[in-house]
Length: 615
Image 1: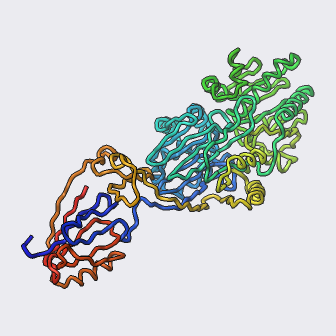
Image 2: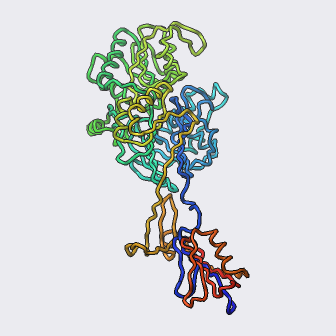
Protein backbone atom coordinates (compact mmCIF):
# COMPACT_ATOMS: atom_id res chain seq x y z
CA UNK A 1 0.00 0.00 0.00
CA UNK A 2 1.49 3.30 -1.11
CA UNK A 3 1.25 6.51 0.84
CA UNK A 4 -1.52 8.79 -0.39
CA UNK A 5 -3.29 5.89 -2.11
CA UNK A 6 -6.64 4.43 -1.28
CA UNK A 7 -7.91 0.89 -0.63
CA UNK A 8 -10.93 -1.34 -0.47
CA UNK A 9 -10.62 -3.78 2.40
CA UNK A 10 -12.82 -6.89 2.14
CA UNK A 11 -13.85 -8.41 5.45
CA UNK A 12 -16.26 -11.27 4.80
CA UNK A 13 -18.67 -11.85 7.64
CA UNK A 14 -18.66 -15.55 8.53
CA UNK A 15 -21.32 -17.29 6.50
CA UNK A 16 -22.48 -14.00 5.08
CA UNK A 17 -24.71 -13.42 8.09
CA UNK A 18 -23.54 -9.97 9.15
CA UNK A 19 -21.30 -7.19 7.86
CA UNK A 20 -18.20 -6.18 9.81
CA UNK A 21 -16.76 -2.72 9.55
CA UNK A 22 -14.86 -0.30 11.78
CA UNK A 23 -16.39 3.07 10.95
CA UNK A 24 -14.38 4.78 13.66
CA UNK A 25 -11.19 4.85 11.56
CA UNK A 26 -12.08 5.44 7.94
CA UNK A 27 -15.09 6.16 5.73
CA UNK A 28 -16.38 2.76 4.64
CA UNK A 29 -18.79 0.92 2.35
CA UNK A 30 -20.40 -1.89 4.37
CA UNK A 31 -22.07 -4.76 2.53
CA UNK A 32 -24.64 -6.07 5.00
CA UNK A 33 -26.85 -9.16 5.17
CA UNK A 34 -29.58 -8.40 2.62
CA UNK A 35 -28.04 -6.12 0.02
CA UNK A 36 -27.13 -8.64 -2.68
CA UNK A 37 -29.73 -10.64 -4.59
CA UNK A 38 -28.93 -14.32 -4.10
CA UNK A 39 -30.69 -17.58 -3.24
CA UNK A 40 -29.33 -19.95 -0.63
CA UNK A 41 -28.72 -23.56 -1.64
CA UNK A 42 -30.52 -24.87 1.44
CA UNK A 43 -33.89 -23.61 0.22
CA UNK A 44 -34.46 -26.74 -1.89
CA UNK A 45 -37.42 -27.73 -4.01
CA UNK A 46 -40.78 -27.20 -2.32
CA UNK A 47 -42.57 -29.66 -4.63
CA UNK A 48 -43.42 -33.14 -3.36
CA UNK A 49 -44.14 -35.88 -5.90
CA UNK A 50 -45.84 -39.21 -5.20
CA UNK A 51 -45.79 -41.73 -8.06
CA UNK A 52 -47.27 -45.26 -7.99
CA UNK A 53 -45.21 -47.69 -10.06
CA UNK A 54 -47.76 -50.34 -9.11
CA UNK A 55 -51.09 -50.44 -7.18
CA UNK A 56 -52.32 -47.35 -9.03
CA UNK A 57 -55.99 -48.13 -9.73
CA UNK A 58 -55.18 -51.82 -9.30
CA UNK A 59 -54.48 -54.36 -6.56
CA UNK A 60 -51.14 -56.10 -6.97
CA UNK A 61 -47.43 -55.20 -7.39
CA UNK A 62 -47.57 -52.41 -4.79
CA UNK A 63 -44.66 -50.05 -5.35
CA UNK A 64 -44.76 -46.27 -4.86
CA UNK A 65 -42.21 -43.46 -5.00
CA UNK A 66 -41.92 -40.34 -2.86
CA UNK A 67 -39.72 -37.53 -4.22
CA UNK A 68 -39.04 -34.47 -2.08
CA UNK A 69 -36.08 -32.19 -1.37
CA UNK A 70 -33.79 -34.23 -3.58
CA UNK A 71 -34.63 -37.49 -1.77
CA UNK A 72 -36.39 -40.50 -3.29
CA UNK A 73 -38.06 -43.18 -1.16
CA UNK A 74 -39.70 -46.34 -2.50
CA UNK A 75 -42.53 -47.95 -0.54
CA UNK A 76 -43.01 -51.69 -1.12
CA UNK A 77 -41.82 -53.74 -4.09
CA UNK A 78 -44.33 -56.44 -4.96
CA UNK A 79 -45.30 -58.68 -7.85
CA UNK A 80 -48.77 -58.95 -9.39
CA UNK A 81 -50.32 -62.38 -8.62
CA UNK A 82 -52.35 -62.23 -11.84
CA UNK A 83 -49.35 -61.96 -14.19
CA UNK A 84 -46.15 -63.90 -14.81
CA UNK A 85 -42.51 -63.09 -15.34
CA UNK A 86 -41.43 -59.50 -15.85
CA UNK A 87 -45.03 -58.60 -16.68
CA UNK A 88 -45.82 -59.04 -12.98
CA UNK A 89 -43.26 -56.44 -11.87
CA UNK A 90 -43.88 -52.77 -11.11
CA UNK A 91 -42.97 -50.21 -13.77
CA UNK A 92 -39.29 -50.06 -12.80
CA UNK A 93 -38.36 -48.60 -16.19
CA UNK A 94 -39.98 -45.31 -15.14
CA UNK A 95 -37.28 -44.60 -12.55
CA UNK A 96 -33.50 -44.69 -12.26
CA UNK A 97 -32.91 -47.25 -9.54
CA UNK A 98 -29.61 -45.69 -8.47
CA UNK A 99 -31.42 -42.44 -7.52
CA UNK A 100 -33.54 -44.18 -4.86
CA UNK A 101 -32.26 -43.60 -1.34
CA UNK A 102 -34.51 -45.95 0.64
CA UNK A 103 -36.80 -48.93 0.13
CA UNK A 104 -39.35 -49.42 2.93
CA UNK A 105 -41.29 -52.72 2.87
CA UNK A 106 -44.53 -52.85 4.86
CA UNK A 107 -45.15 -56.64 5.00
CA UNK A 108 -44.35 -60.01 3.48
CA UNK A 109 -47.25 -60.62 1.07
CA UNK A 110 -46.36 -61.37 -2.55
CA UNK A 111 -48.00 -58.22 -3.91
CA UNK A 112 -45.91 -56.06 -1.57
CA UNK A 113 -42.56 -57.84 -1.27
CA UNK A 114 -42.03 -60.53 -3.92
CA UNK A 115 -40.04 -58.26 -6.26
CA UNK A 116 -37.54 -57.12 -3.61
CA UNK A 117 -34.84 -59.70 -4.55
CA UNK A 118 -35.22 -58.79 -8.22
CA UNK A 119 -34.91 -55.06 -7.51
CA UNK A 120 -31.87 -55.47 -5.27
CA UNK A 121 -29.94 -57.89 -7.50
CA UNK A 122 -31.06 -57.08 -11.07
CA UNK A 123 -31.09 -53.26 -11.03
CA UNK A 124 -28.64 -50.48 -10.12
CA UNK A 125 -30.29 -49.80 -6.75
CA UNK A 126 -27.68 -48.95 -4.10
CA UNK A 127 -29.85 -47.60 -1.29
CA UNK A 128 -30.87 -49.09 2.05
CA UNK A 129 -33.78 -51.47 2.68
CA UNK A 130 -35.82 -51.55 5.89
CA UNK A 131 -38.57 -53.84 7.20
CA UNK A 132 -39.65 -55.27 10.57
CA UNK A 133 -38.08 -58.39 12.05
CA UNK A 134 -41.12 -60.68 11.50
CA UNK A 135 -41.42 -59.44 7.92
CA UNK A 136 -37.86 -60.45 7.09
CA UNK A 137 -38.21 -63.81 8.83
CA UNK A 138 -41.26 -64.69 6.73
CA UNK A 139 -40.07 -63.00 3.53
CA UNK A 140 -37.31 -65.60 3.34
CA UNK A 141 -39.98 -68.29 3.06
CA UNK A 142 -42.20 -66.30 0.71
CA UNK A 143 -39.40 -65.54 -1.76
CA UNK A 144 -38.28 -69.18 -1.94
CA UNK A 145 -41.84 -70.36 -2.36
CA UNK A 146 -42.52 -67.68 -5.00
CA UNK A 147 -39.90 -68.98 -7.40
CA UNK A 148 -41.00 -72.60 -6.83
CA UNK A 149 -44.77 -72.44 -7.26
CA UNK A 150 -45.38 -69.36 -9.39
CA UNK A 151 -44.81 -71.32 -12.58
CA UNK A 152 -42.51 -68.65 -13.96
CA UNK A 153 -39.59 -70.94 -14.78
CA UNK A 154 -41.67 -73.47 -16.69
CA UNK A 155 -43.90 -71.08 -18.62
CA UNK A 156 -41.60 -68.16 -19.28
CA UNK A 157 -38.14 -69.58 -19.73
CA UNK A 158 -36.59 -68.56 -16.45
CA UNK A 159 -37.16 -67.26 -12.92
CA UNK A 160 -37.12 -63.62 -11.91
CA UNK A 161 -34.40 -64.46 -9.39
CA UNK A 162 -32.56 -67.37 -7.82
CA UNK A 163 -31.91 -68.71 -4.33
CA UNK A 164 -28.51 -67.00 -4.44
CA UNK A 165 -30.23 -63.71 -5.21
CA UNK A 166 -32.43 -64.26 -2.17
CA UNK A 167 -29.40 -64.80 0.07
CA UNK A 168 -27.72 -61.69 -1.34
CA UNK A 169 -30.91 -59.73 -0.69
CA UNK A 170 -31.23 -60.90 2.92
CA UNK A 171 -27.72 -59.67 3.70
CA UNK A 172 -28.65 -56.13 2.60
CA UNK A 173 -31.84 -55.72 4.67
CA UNK A 174 -31.93 -53.73 7.91
CA UNK A 175 -34.60 -54.64 10.46
CA UNK A 176 -36.38 -52.15 12.71
CA UNK A 177 -38.88 -52.28 15.57
CA UNK A 178 -42.20 -50.49 15.80
CA UNK A 179 -41.72 -46.82 16.82
CA UNK A 180 -37.95 -47.00 16.36
CA UNK A 181 -36.83 -43.72 14.76
CA UNK A 182 -34.22 -43.94 12.01
CA UNK A 183 -32.53 -41.06 10.19
CA UNK A 184 -30.74 -41.51 6.86
CA UNK A 185 -29.21 -38.38 5.33
CA UNK A 186 -31.95 -36.06 6.52
CA UNK A 187 -34.85 -38.49 6.02
CA UNK A 188 -36.46 -39.49 9.33
CA UNK A 189 -38.85 -42.42 9.48
CA UNK A 190 -40.46 -44.82 11.91
CA UNK A 191 -43.28 -47.36 11.73
CA UNK A 192 -46.52 -48.35 13.46
CA UNK A 193 -48.29 -51.68 13.83
CA UNK A 194 -50.69 -52.04 10.87
CA UNK A 195 -52.63 -55.15 11.90
CA UNK A 196 -53.25 -57.11 8.65
CA UNK A 197 -50.55 -59.79 9.14
CA UNK A 198 -47.77 -60.50 11.59
CA UNK A 199 -45.09 -57.80 11.30
CA UNK A 200 -47.09 -55.53 8.98
CA UNK A 201 -46.37 -51.85 9.51
CA UNK A 202 -47.30 -48.35 8.38
CA UNK A 203 -44.34 -46.09 7.62
CA UNK A 204 -44.19 -42.45 8.68
CA UNK A 205 -41.58 -40.49 6.70
CA UNK A 206 -40.53 -36.96 7.59
CA UNK A 207 -38.48 -34.77 5.25
CA UNK A 208 -37.85 -31.08 6.03
CA UNK A 209 -40.77 -31.05 8.48
CA UNK A 210 -43.28 -32.59 6.04
CA UNK A 211 -44.72 -35.93 7.20
CA UNK A 212 -46.18 -38.62 4.93
CA UNK A 213 -47.89 -41.76 6.27
CA UNK A 214 -47.95 -44.79 3.97
CA UNK A 215 -50.38 -47.36 5.39
CA UNK A 216 -49.63 -50.31 3.12
CA UNK A 217 -52.31 -52.92 3.91
CA UNK A 218 -53.85 -52.23 7.29
CA UNK A 219 -56.83 -53.19 9.42
CA UNK A 220 -58.37 -51.28 12.29
CA UNK A 221 -60.25 -54.37 13.51
CA UNK A 222 -58.66 -56.80 15.96
CA UNK A 223 -59.01 -60.46 14.98
CA UNK A 224 -58.18 -63.76 16.67
CA UNK A 225 -54.44 -63.17 16.82
CA UNK A 226 -53.57 -59.66 15.62
CA UNK A 227 -53.98 -56.22 17.14
CA UNK A 228 -55.75 -53.44 15.29
CA UNK A 229 -53.65 -50.88 13.42
CA UNK A 230 -52.31 -48.08 15.59
CA UNK A 231 -53.36 -44.45 15.33
CA UNK A 232 -50.35 -42.10 14.93
CA UNK A 233 -50.32 -39.25 17.42
CA UNK A 234 -48.50 -36.71 15.23
CA UNK A 235 -49.74 -34.37 12.51
CA UNK A 236 -49.76 -35.97 9.04
CA UNK A 237 -49.55 -33.78 5.97
CA UNK A 238 -49.96 -36.52 3.33
CA UNK A 239 -51.82 -39.80 3.90
CA UNK A 240 -51.30 -42.59 1.37
CA UNK A 241 -53.99 -45.15 2.14
CA UNK A 242 -55.24 -48.39 0.63
CA UNK A 243 -58.67 -48.41 -1.03
CA UNK A 244 -59.06 -52.17 -1.50
CA UNK A 245 -62.72 -52.38 -0.49
CA UNK A 246 -63.84 -48.94 -1.64
CA UNK A 247 -67.09 -48.07 0.16
CA UNK A 248 -67.89 -51.67 1.15
CA UNK A 249 -68.33 -52.54 4.83
CA UNK A 250 -67.16 -55.83 6.37
CA UNK A 251 -69.51 -58.07 8.28
CA UNK A 252 -68.66 -58.21 12.01
CA UNK A 253 -66.23 -60.96 12.97
CA UNK A 254 -68.55 -63.18 15.02
CA UNK A 255 -71.34 -63.56 12.39
CA UNK A 256 -68.67 -64.08 9.72
CA UNK A 257 -67.05 -66.90 11.72
CA UNK A 258 -70.46 -68.56 12.26
CA UNK A 259 -71.25 -68.42 8.54
CA UNK A 260 -67.86 -69.91 7.72
CA UNK A 261 -68.23 -72.81 10.17
CA UNK A 262 -71.77 -73.54 8.98
CA UNK A 263 -70.57 -73.77 5.35
CA UNK A 264 -67.73 -76.10 6.30
CA UNK A 265 -69.71 -78.37 8.62
CA UNK A 266 -72.72 -78.66 6.28
CA UNK A 267 -70.47 -79.71 3.41
CA UNK A 268 -68.74 -82.35 5.55
CA UNK A 269 -72.01 -83.78 6.83
CA UNK A 270 -73.22 -84.21 3.23
CA UNK A 271 -70.11 -86.19 2.34
CA UNK A 272 -68.27 -83.41 0.53
CA UNK A 273 -64.77 -82.00 0.58
CA UNK A 274 -64.04 -78.40 1.57
CA UNK A 275 -61.26 -76.51 -0.19
CA UNK A 276 -59.91 -73.40 1.52
CA UNK A 277 -57.58 -71.58 -0.89
CA UNK A 278 -55.50 -69.21 1.23
CA UNK A 279 -52.16 -67.51 1.34
CA UNK A 280 -49.96 -69.87 3.32
CA UNK A 281 -49.07 -67.17 5.84
CA UNK A 282 -51.47 -64.60 7.24
CA UNK A 283 -55.14 -65.50 6.92
CA UNK A 284 -54.20 -69.19 7.04
CA UNK A 285 -53.18 -68.91 10.70
CA UNK A 286 -56.39 -67.03 11.52
CA UNK A 287 -58.52 -69.79 10.01
CA UNK A 288 -56.44 -72.56 11.59
CA UNK A 289 -56.97 -70.99 15.02
CA UNK A 290 -60.73 -70.95 14.39
CA UNK A 291 -60.95 -74.52 13.06
CA UNK A 292 -58.73 -76.02 15.75
CA UNK A 293 -60.70 -74.31 18.50
CA UNK A 294 -64.05 -75.51 17.08
CA UNK A 295 -62.79 -79.07 16.55
CA UNK A 296 -61.64 -79.14 20.21
CA UNK A 297 -65.10 -78.07 21.35
CA UNK A 298 -66.99 -80.45 19.02
CA UNK A 299 -65.89 -84.11 19.37
CA UNK A 300 -68.26 -85.32 16.62
CA UNK A 301 -66.32 -83.24 14.08
CA UNK A 302 -63.00 -84.82 14.96
CA UNK A 303 -63.62 -87.72 12.55
CA UNK A 304 -63.21 -85.24 9.67
CA UNK A 305 -59.52 -84.50 9.06
CA UNK A 306 -58.37 -80.87 8.72
CA UNK A 307 -55.28 -80.70 6.54
CA UNK A 308 -52.95 -77.78 5.86
CA UNK A 309 -51.32 -78.61 2.55
CA UNK A 310 -48.39 -76.21 2.77
CA UNK A 311 -44.84 -76.76 3.89
CA UNK A 312 -44.38 -73.00 4.16
CA UNK A 313 -47.34 -72.67 6.56
CA UNK A 314 -45.67 -75.24 8.80
CA UNK A 315 -42.25 -73.60 8.57
CA UNK A 316 -43.63 -70.18 9.47
CA UNK A 317 -45.02 -71.44 12.79
CA UNK A 318 -41.58 -70.87 14.32
CA UNK A 319 -41.84 -67.18 13.43
CA UNK A 320 -45.33 -66.96 14.92
CA UNK A 321 -44.05 -68.51 18.14
CA UNK A 322 -41.01 -66.20 18.20
CA UNK A 323 -42.98 -62.97 17.74
CA UNK A 324 -46.01 -63.81 19.84
CA UNK A 325 -45.35 -60.62 21.82
CA UNK A 326 -46.48 -58.64 18.75
CA UNK A 327 -49.93 -60.26 18.79
CA UNK A 328 -53.03 -59.30 20.75
CA UNK A 329 -53.72 -59.88 24.44
CA UNK A 330 -55.85 -62.96 23.77
CA UNK A 331 -52.99 -64.83 22.14
CA UNK A 332 -50.46 -63.71 24.74
CA UNK A 333 -52.71 -64.94 27.55
CA UNK A 334 -53.27 -68.28 25.81
CA UNK A 335 -49.53 -68.58 25.39
CA UNK A 336 -49.12 -68.43 29.17
CA UNK A 337 -50.96 -71.78 29.30
CA UNK A 338 -49.85 -73.44 26.06
CA UNK A 339 -48.69 -72.42 22.62
CA UNK A 340 -51.87 -71.42 20.71
CA UNK A 341 -50.19 -72.33 17.41
CA UNK A 342 -49.51 -75.90 18.51
CA UNK A 343 -52.67 -77.19 16.83
CA UNK A 344 -54.13 -80.50 18.06
CA UNK A 345 -56.46 -81.19 15.15
CA UNK A 346 -54.50 -79.85 12.18
CA UNK A 347 -52.34 -82.14 10.04
CA UNK A 348 -49.59 -80.58 7.96
CA UNK A 349 -48.55 -81.97 4.58
CA UNK A 350 -45.84 -80.65 2.31
CA UNK A 351 -47.08 -81.99 -1.04
CA UNK A 352 -50.29 -83.20 -2.63
CA UNK A 353 -48.76 -86.67 -3.08
CA UNK A 354 -49.05 -87.19 0.71
CA UNK A 355 -52.80 -86.52 0.64
CA UNK A 356 -55.12 -89.54 0.60
CA UNK A 357 -58.41 -88.38 -0.85
CA UNK A 358 -60.65 -91.06 0.64
CA UNK A 359 -63.13 -89.26 2.92
CA UNK A 360 -64.85 -85.92 3.59
CA UNK A 361 -62.24 -83.46 4.82
CA UNK A 362 -61.14 -79.84 5.02
CA UNK A 363 -58.02 -78.94 3.05
CA UNK A 364 -56.31 -75.60 3.28
CA UNK A 365 -53.96 -75.00 0.35
CA UNK A 366 -52.16 -72.15 -1.35
CA UNK A 367 -52.21 -69.97 -3.34
CA UNK A 368 -55.29 -68.08 -2.28
CA UNK A 369 -56.48 -67.10 -5.75
CA UNK A 370 -56.36 -70.59 -7.33
CA UNK A 371 -53.98 -69.47 -10.07
CA UNK A 372 -51.69 -72.52 -9.74
CA UNK A 373 -50.14 -74.87 -7.18
CA UNK A 374 -51.88 -77.28 -4.79
CA UNK A 375 -55.08 -75.26 -4.43
CA UNK A 376 -55.58 -75.28 -8.20
CA UNK A 377 -54.81 -79.00 -8.42
CA UNK A 378 -57.44 -79.82 -5.80
CA UNK A 379 -59.99 -77.50 -7.37
CA UNK A 380 -59.55 -79.25 -10.71
CA UNK A 381 -60.04 -82.59 -8.96
CA UNK A 382 -63.17 -81.62 -7.00
CA UNK A 383 -64.92 -79.07 -9.20
CA UNK A 384 -67.34 -81.56 -10.88
CA UNK A 385 -68.92 -82.85 -7.64
CA UNK A 386 -71.82 -80.76 -6.30
CA UNK A 387 -71.28 -82.11 -2.78
CA UNK A 388 -67.93 -80.29 -2.57
CA UNK A 389 -67.38 -76.64 -1.70
CA UNK A 390 -64.70 -74.04 -2.13
CA UNK A 391 -64.68 -71.17 0.38
CA UNK A 392 -62.89 -68.04 -0.83
CA UNK A 393 -61.83 -66.16 2.29
CA UNK A 394 -59.44 -63.51 0.98
CA UNK A 395 -59.31 -60.67 -1.51
CA UNK A 396 -58.90 -61.74 -5.15
CA UNK A 397 -57.31 -59.70 -7.91
CA UNK A 398 -58.23 -59.65 -11.59
CA UNK A 399 -56.94 -62.31 -13.97
CA UNK A 400 -57.20 -65.08 -11.38
CA UNK A 401 -59.51 -68.10 -11.24
CA UNK A 402 -60.89 -67.15 -7.81
CA UNK A 403 -61.90 -63.70 -9.09
CA UNK A 404 -63.62 -65.25 -12.11
CA UNK A 405 -65.56 -67.69 -9.92
CA UNK A 406 -66.89 -64.85 -7.75
CA UNK A 407 -67.70 -62.40 -10.53
CA UNK A 408 -68.91 -64.44 -13.50
CA UNK A 409 -70.21 -67.66 -11.87
CA UNK A 410 -69.18 -69.84 -14.84
CA UNK A 411 -70.95 -73.11 -15.70
CA UNK A 412 -67.82 -74.82 -17.00
CA UNK A 413 -64.19 -74.89 -15.95
CA UNK A 414 -61.04 -75.31 -18.01
CA UNK A 415 -58.60 -77.71 -16.38
CA UNK A 416 -54.87 -77.09 -16.44
CA UNK A 417 -54.53 -79.68 -19.20
CA UNK A 418 -56.91 -77.66 -21.38
CA UNK A 419 -60.05 -79.81 -21.09
CA UNK A 420 -63.40 -78.19 -20.23
CA UNK A 421 -65.54 -79.83 -17.53
CA UNK A 422 -68.88 -78.92 -15.93
CA UNK A 423 -68.49 -76.75 -12.84
CA UNK A 424 -70.75 -78.08 -10.06
CA UNK A 425 -68.72 -77.31 -6.91
CA UNK A 426 -70.45 -74.83 -4.59
CA UNK A 427 -68.60 -71.51 -4.25
CA UNK A 428 -68.81 -69.49 -1.02
CA UNK A 429 -67.37 -66.03 -0.55
CA UNK A 430 -66.83 -65.36 3.16
CA UNK A 431 -64.21 -62.68 3.55
CA UNK A 432 -61.65 -62.89 6.32
CA UNK A 433 -59.55 -60.31 4.50
CA UNK A 434 -57.63 -58.10 6.92
CA UNK A 435 -57.99 -54.94 4.85
CA UNK A 436 -59.71 -51.80 6.08
CA UNK A 437 -63.27 -51.30 4.87
CA UNK A 438 -64.99 -47.94 4.29
CA UNK A 439 -65.97 -47.42 7.94
CA UNK A 440 -62.44 -48.15 9.17
CA UNK A 441 -60.84 -45.90 6.55
CA UNK A 442 -63.30 -43.06 7.15
CA UNK A 443 -62.79 -43.13 10.93
CA UNK A 444 -59.03 -43.39 10.47
CA UNK A 445 -58.99 -40.26 8.29
CA UNK A 446 -61.29 -38.40 10.69
CA UNK A 447 -58.91 -39.00 13.59
CA UNK A 448 -55.73 -38.43 11.61
CA UNK A 449 -56.97 -35.26 9.84
CA UNK A 450 -54.39 -35.18 7.03
CA UNK A 451 -54.06 -32.24 4.64
CA UNK A 452 -53.86 -34.46 1.54
CA UNK A 453 -55.08 -38.01 0.79
CA UNK A 454 -53.67 -40.27 -1.93
CA UNK A 455 -55.54 -43.50 -2.69
CA UNK A 456 -53.66 -46.62 -3.83
CA UNK A 457 -54.15 -50.41 -3.81
CA UNK A 458 -57.68 -50.58 -5.18
CA UNK A 459 -59.40 -51.63 -8.38
CA UNK A 460 -60.50 -48.63 -10.46
CA UNK A 461 -64.20 -48.86 -9.58
CA UNK A 462 -63.55 -49.38 -5.86
CA UNK A 463 -61.09 -46.50 -5.78
CA UNK A 464 -63.43 -44.19 -7.71
CA UNK A 465 -66.33 -44.85 -5.32
CA UNK A 466 -64.15 -44.21 -2.27
CA UNK A 467 -62.71 -41.04 -3.79
CA UNK A 468 -66.20 -39.74 -4.52
CA UNK A 469 -67.28 -40.29 -0.92
CA UNK A 470 -64.15 -38.67 0.52
CA UNK A 471 -64.30 -35.65 -1.80
CA UNK A 472 -67.92 -35.09 -0.82
CA UNK A 473 -67.16 -35.49 2.88
CA UNK A 474 -64.12 -33.20 3.02
CA UNK A 475 -64.92 -30.60 0.32
CA UNK A 476 -65.59 -27.95 2.97
CA UNK A 477 -62.28 -28.54 4.75
CA UNK A 478 -60.00 -28.15 1.73
CA UNK A 479 -58.57 -31.67 1.99
CA UNK A 480 -57.36 -32.85 -1.43
CA UNK A 481 -58.06 -36.43 -2.57
CA UNK A 482 -56.11 -38.09 -5.41
CA UNK A 483 -56.34 -41.52 -7.07
CA UNK A 484 -53.41 -41.68 -9.52
CA UNK A 485 -52.92 -44.28 -12.23
CA UNK A 486 -49.66 -46.21 -12.42
CA UNK A 487 -46.75 -43.86 -13.28
CA UNK A 488 -49.02 -40.80 -12.83
CA UNK A 489 -47.50 -38.25 -10.42
CA UNK A 490 -49.39 -36.46 -7.66
CA UNK A 491 -47.66 -33.10 -7.17
CA UNK A 492 -48.04 -31.15 -3.93
CA UNK A 493 -46.35 -27.92 -2.87
CA UNK A 494 -45.21 -27.20 0.69
CA UNK A 495 -44.01 -23.66 1.45
CA UNK A 496 -41.74 -23.92 4.44
CA UNK A 497 -40.47 -21.07 6.54
CA UNK A 498 -36.72 -20.97 7.06
CA UNK A 499 -35.89 -21.10 10.75
CA UNK A 500 -32.32 -21.30 12.00
CA UNK A 501 -31.33 -22.28 15.53
CA UNK A 502 -28.53 -20.31 17.18
CA UNK A 503 -26.25 -22.63 19.16
CA UNK A 504 -22.87 -22.63 20.81
CA UNK A 505 -21.04 -19.63 22.19
CA UNK A 506 -23.13 -17.05 20.31
CA UNK A 507 -26.23 -18.37 22.07
CA UNK A 508 -24.77 -17.64 25.52
CA UNK A 509 -26.61 -14.30 25.75
CA UNK A 510 -30.24 -13.66 24.90
CA UNK A 511 -30.44 -11.65 21.65
CA UNK A 512 -31.46 -8.00 21.93
CA UNK A 513 -33.33 -5.94 19.39
CA UNK A 514 -30.99 -4.34 16.90
CA UNK A 515 -28.05 -6.51 17.90
CA UNK A 516 -25.95 -7.65 14.95
CA UNK A 517 -25.43 -11.42 14.92
CA UNK A 518 -22.30 -12.84 13.36
CA UNK A 519 -21.90 -16.54 12.60
CA UNK A 520 -21.89 -19.32 10.05
CA UNK A 521 -25.08 -20.90 8.72
CA UNK A 522 -24.84 -24.71 8.75
CA UNK A 523 -27.28 -26.65 6.58
CA UNK A 524 -27.54 -30.32 7.47
CA UNK A 525 -30.44 -32.72 7.03
CA UNK A 526 -32.80 -29.88 6.09
CA UNK A 527 -32.09 -28.03 9.34
CA UNK A 528 -30.38 -24.64 9.66
CA UNK A 529 -28.05 -23.78 12.51
CA UNK A 530 -26.06 -20.61 13.19
CA UNK A 531 -22.79 -21.08 15.07
CA UNK A 532 -19.71 -19.03 15.78
CA UNK A 533 -16.81 -19.65 13.43
CA UNK A 534 -14.83 -20.75 16.47
CA UNK A 535 -17.43 -23.53 17.10
CA UNK A 536 -17.25 -24.99 13.62
CA UNK A 537 -15.16 -27.96 14.70
CA UNK A 538 -17.65 -28.95 17.42
CA UNK A 539 -20.85 -28.51 15.40
CA UNK A 540 -19.79 -29.26 11.84
CA UNK A 541 -16.70 -31.41 12.27
CA UNK A 542 -14.73 -28.90 10.20
CA UNK A 543 -11.39 -27.36 11.03
CA UNK A 544 -11.14 -23.61 10.42
CA UNK A 545 -8.29 -22.30 8.31
CA UNK A 546 -7.54 -18.64 7.57
CA UNK A 547 -6.48 -17.43 4.15
CA UNK A 548 -5.40 -13.83 3.68
CA UNK A 549 -5.56 -12.49 0.16
CA UNK A 550 -4.50 -9.05 -1.05
CA UNK A 551 -5.35 -7.82 -4.50
CA UNK A 552 -4.24 -4.57 -6.12
CA UNK A 553 -6.63 -3.15 -8.71
CA UNK A 554 -5.76 0.08 -10.59
CA UNK A 555 -8.69 2.50 -10.60
CA UNK A 556 -8.27 5.94 -12.10
CA UNK A 557 -11.88 7.07 -12.45
CA UNK A 558 -13.63 9.60 -10.19
CA UNK A 559 -15.07 8.40 -6.89
CA UNK A 560 -18.59 8.93 -8.23
CA UNK A 561 -18.01 6.30 -10.92
CA UNK A 562 -17.25 3.72 -8.22
CA UNK A 563 -20.38 4.74 -6.37
CA UNK A 564 -22.41 4.41 -9.56
CA UNK A 565 -21.24 0.86 -10.26
CA UNK A 566 -21.73 -0.21 -6.64
CA UNK A 567 -25.28 1.11 -6.78
CA UNK A 568 -25.96 -1.39 -9.55
CA UNK A 569 -25.02 -4.25 -7.24
CA UNK A 570 -26.61 -3.15 -3.97
CA UNK A 571 -30.03 -1.84 -3.06
CA UNK A 572 -29.04 1.37 -1.33
CA UNK A 573 -25.87 3.47 -1.30
CA UNK A 574 -25.46 6.33 1.22
CA UNK A 575 -22.78 9.03 0.88
CA UNK A 576 -21.09 9.89 4.19
CA UNK A 577 -17.97 11.74 5.25
CA UNK A 578 -14.98 10.66 7.28
CA UNK A 579 -13.93 12.29 10.52
CA UNK A 580 -11.81 14.92 8.80
CA UNK A 581 -14.59 15.80 6.37
CA UNK A 582 -12.33 15.67 3.28
CA UNK A 583 -12.82 12.08 2.11
CA UNK A 584 -16.35 11.18 1.12
CA UNK A 585 -17.29 7.51 1.15
CA UNK A 586 -20.25 5.39 0.28
CA UNK A 587 -22.05 2.93 2.51
CA UNK A 588 -24.51 0.40 1.06
CA UNK A 589 -27.34 0.00 3.53
CA UNK A 590 -27.87 -3.72 2.95
CA UNK A 591 -24.96 -5.91 1.93
CA UNK A 592 -24.15 -9.53 2.60
CA UNK A 593 -20.46 -10.00 2.11
CA UNK A 594 -18.91 -7.73 4.74
CA UNK A 595 -16.76 -5.84 2.21
CA UNK A 596 -15.52 -2.38 3.18
CA UNK A 597 -14.47 0.26 0.67
CA UNK A 598 -12.79 3.46 1.78
CA UNK A 599 -11.29 6.40 -0.07
CA UNK A 600 -8.34 8.41 1.21
CA UNK A 601 -8.45 10.78 -1.76
CA UNK A 602 -11.75 12.28 -2.88
CA UNK A 603 -10.68 12.57 -6.54
CA UNK A 604 -9.46 9.08 -7.34
CA UNK A 605 -8.86 5.65 -5.91
CA UNK A 606 -5.48 4.33 -6.97
CA UNK A 607 -5.65 1.00 -5.28
CA UNK A 608 -8.29 -1.39 -4.04
CA UNK A 609 -7.22 -4.04 -1.58
CA UNK A 610 -9.46 -6.90 -0.55
CA UNK A 611 -8.84 -8.94 2.58
CA UNK A 612 -11.06 -11.92 3.24
CA UNK A 613 -11.31 -14.81 5.68
CA UNK A 614 -12.28 -18.09 4.04
CA UNK A 615 -13.02 -21.43 5.66
